[in-house]
Length: 82
Image 1 (cartoon, one colour):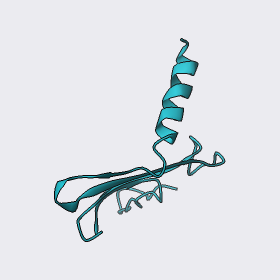
Image 2: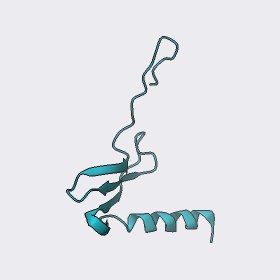
Image 3: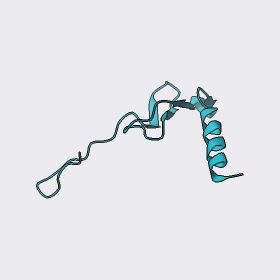
């Protein structure tokens, strides 16, 4: 299997998790969302993704996604990034 084929099968495996919810003891749950989107500067890999951990009451406790980049603050010694 070539590296390209391995990457493609890994991506397909990841995309197969779209919409899955894993429920844990005491009501905690994980939600997965993975979708292909057109490649842009914000999403150069062409994926829109979100992986979130929720508490029993539905409160989002932890999440990883590509919603936006955290803005870096500049100072008089460091210019803010473009």
